[in-house]
Image 1 (cartoon, rainbow, N blue to C red):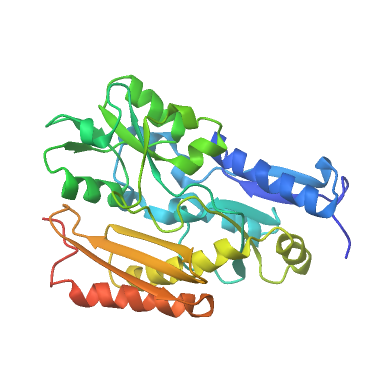
Image 2: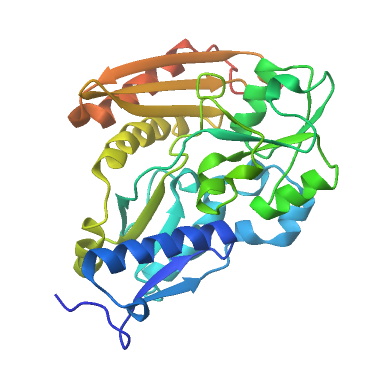
Amino acid sequence: MNMPNAQNPLKIGTRGSPLALAQAFETRQRLMSAHHLPEDACEIVIIKTTGDDKTLIAADRPLKEIGNKGLFTKEIEEAMLAGAIDIAVHSTKDMPVDQPRGLVLDCYLPREDVRDAFMSTSFARLADLPEGAVVGSSSLRRRAQLANRRPDLKLVEFRGNVQTRLKKLNDGVADATFLAMAGLNRLGMAALAKSAVEVDEMLPAVAQGAIGIERRADDTLAGALLAAIHDAPTGERLAAERAYLRTLDGSCETPIAGLAVHEGGGLWLRGEILRPDGSEVIRGERRFGASDAAEAGADLARALLAEAPKGFFDWR
């Protein structure tokens, strides 16, 4: 196997936000450590995606109107298929459940904190928000969960990377917002969170906190390099979560939450789907062995869909 070197480096594709770069640097460091590579054997390549378009961020249009998850991956995947990069580092929760022909996602780094972070300049917890407080979020899942738990709150669109959303919060656009604890941890900014929201209060997005690394299916060198840094327990959890999401996404676009954890030698998957306005939530769970992860995820999704009345996913 011809290892990457300064003359022929492994090209790591990423978005250019501070969080995306932090994830790419972590990936590079793990590859360097696992294979005893010098830093110049791994080159970070920044690729602008549709989701990085500042005019879209400024407009605060809902993601579902712009293109949803493919917003943050399409251009990076096109660059990889064209051979401009060798691997791509993603926040897995931003990824579509199916990869383009010729690409595979089979490497995950150890999962970070899966919880949501409550961010505010004036309040310590979600429960402290007064009636009528303004909460900013572009997440369909978070908005529906908030509407379900706190229908008295006013919800507004709130897009952008971590730094953009924190600026909006400090500018008084909203009284509170939510970020992922994983992102804050990776940026060394965890102290900015007023509190972490426990998963029993707000079940997180599927794959929240997980870094996924994509490659060309026929690139055996990249496959071998990434195999050494793949975290198997994270892979088992995401096999269940992404199968659950795939089955739901095949039928609807809806607020979806899901989390698998290891428990007693097996895994425990919890999931919930909500009406977009938060007026109703359907929950379920499964316990299973790691080898049954994908089927268990799909089975839970089918069960939730079977409980959903006609029109459940429609906007009212």
